[in-house]
Length: 239
Image 1 (cartoon, one colour):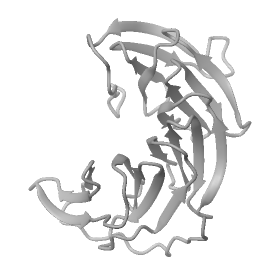
Image 2: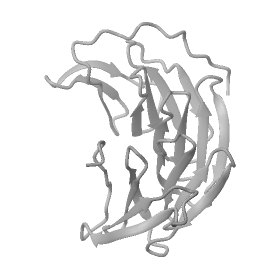
Image 3: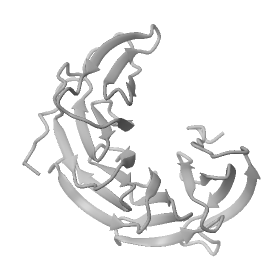
């Protein structure tokens, strides 16, 4: 991958609205919208590039947009008018299914149908770490402590990855080999929710590693839908 660098931090762009609303589609375009009026303020047209937009993530400081485009991740500057990515991360061999930023925007993590989880350094603009999940990854969340990742996969597993040890430290299989489709983590790291392909939803309390209680303590499970579950989501304030 050619060397790429981020531009120096500039003053935050001035917006009429503080809300950043972005959409991506199978038409390959990425569009920015004025959330309260529905007016499109910017379109990133990818004329020379194929591949649908699978996932989008905005950095916590609203400076960068990460777009998972088939097997690549394009990084765009939110306040720019250019359709050219600042950085293009390449390394996955199949569809990217998940992308999340570090809380301070130092790195981002991606999961893919190729069975890998990759951490990309936004400062050096290179691949920082690679984890072999051994099954297609469907979703990933970054723990609020920024030192752990939690993933779910097509083999029905939920895994916790310790970034300091570079290993999987915990593994759950709540429904055997039924694929786990989506996970959501409380903003304080106290609760994890997961949903699977049969419409079931599972809830765990997350205990401190040093406590005598299990790290993931099952709280409840229920049939949320009668068909394939696509997403589960906890409220930001955990209330």
